[in-house]
Image 1 (cartoon, rainbow, N blue to C red):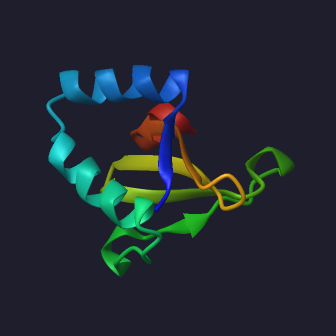
Image 2 (cartoon, one colour):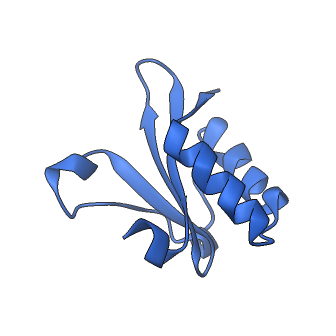
Length: 92
């Protein structure tokens, strides 16, 4: 089981998502899969980001069509690093 590490920017992004009325329960559902190291169901469209070397090992999944979670798993330290969350326009 992985331990969750919340990055500072993720915390800001999450606060904004809650102000926008997005449901925390949907994020919790995704996190339950990730901390247990289970493969996400296809509906979350989980994939690795490859745009640049800065995204090496970073993954993204869709909590909702325009609500994304950007994360990185560190298997050596057993950490789930939550990097960003928000809409496409917020993140890219």
